[in-house]
View 1 (tube, one colour):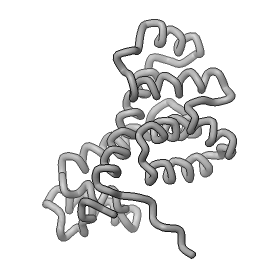
View 2 (cartoon, helix red, strand yellow):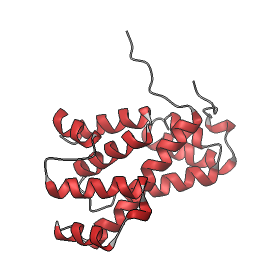
View 3 (cartoon, one colour):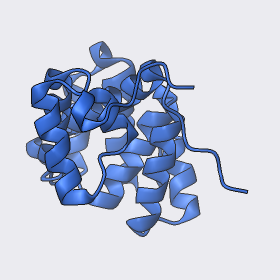
View 4 (cartoon, one colour):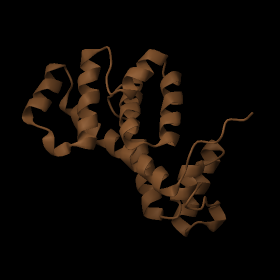
Amino acid sequence: MPRLTVLEPDQAPDKSRELLKEIIGRHGSAGRMVSTMAHSPALLEGYLNLSRAMKRVKIPRPLSEKISLALQEWIGCELCKQAHTAAARAAGLSESDIELARQGTSTDAREAALIGVAVRVYAEPASLSEQDVAELRGHGWSDRVIAELVGLVTLNLMTGAFNLLAGLEPEPEPG
């Protein structure tokens, strides 16, 4: 059950109202998470800016979804897991790929290395070392991708933690 109110644009603070109207104008709706984030114009604007920026990363979309699935298993946001599972399928991932991602790995060693470091960035960032970066470089990952990994982890933490705090859960299946 939601703990924070989902806002309509006319209920939101001025800056949030502008952002919600822009989103609704482009997409038809804003979604429950974004409409709930609207309580804080700073949070909503920060989320939207980070989300847009992370769409320009050099991490391939299917791999980005694998990373998000691994992270959301740790974070525990069912709404995010559902959204990233759907996005992973849309990106062409098999059910086996999705299950392995949820376990924090991949059949591809190069991808598994990046997924593993992403989970450590989330769960134990103080443990990261020069050796970890060298290993990622050894798998052919650029410094840009390694840096962008932190942004992807941050975005997942922001959305997952927000949804958990706000009490946002997947909609019940019709039936």
